Length: 282
Image (tube, rainbow, N blue to C red):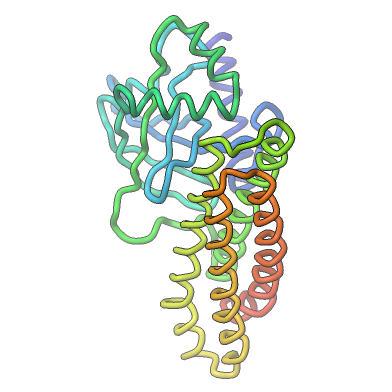
C-alpha cells in the first residue's frame, strides 16, 4: 500500500477514534486500539499512529511492531527506539509512557499470547521474515492520567463507558473460549485480571476522592453516596469471585462470573451516572 494511502487511512482512523473516544468501525471494529504518538528518530517531529494493543497488567500494555507482516519494522518502532517516551491515547485517557522492547523468553511468551487470541499475528510473523518486536508501554507515574472530557460529569461517563467496552470485549472473548476449548487462554486471563485491577483502582479513587468532595458540597446526597459505597463493596466481592473463577481454568465458570459482574456493574454505573453527573455538572 502506498505511503500516501496508508497516511490517509491512518488519519481517518485517528479522527474517528478521537471523535468516538476509542471506538472505530471498519477494519479495527471490535479491536483494542490506542493512538501512539512518537517522536521522529530523524526529524524530531511528532507522529501519531493507530496501533492494536494487548492488556498486560496494572501499569503497562503491549504493542506489536508487525507492520502487517512487512519485512521492515514500522516507523513508529524506530522512533521509540530513539525516543522511548511516548504519548498513549486510549479513548478515555491520555498519558505519557516509557517504551521498553521485550527480549528473549519474555518477548516469546507475550507474542504467543497474542497468537492465542488471533492467529493473524502468526501469519504476520511468517510473512515478515524477521522477529517481530513486542514493546511494553509503561505508564509514567506523575498523577492521574488526563481524562478526555470537558467536565467532571462527562469524565465519569467517559470512564464508565471505557469499563463497559472492555467488559463487552471480555464477554465476547469468553464466549469464543467457552465454545472452542476447555480452559482459559493466557491472554484472556490477563485481560480479566487487568480489568479487575482497573475497576478496583477506579472505585478506590471514588471512595477516597470523589465521594468526600461531593459529600462536602452536597450534604443531601449522603444517602446516594452511602449506597454507592455499599455497591462498591458488593462489586469488589464479585471481582474476587471472578478472580477465583479464572484460577479454576474452567471457562464455563469464568463466563458465569463475568455475566454476573456485567449485570451488577451496569446497574451500579447507571445509578451513579443518574445521581452524580447532575451534581458534578451543576
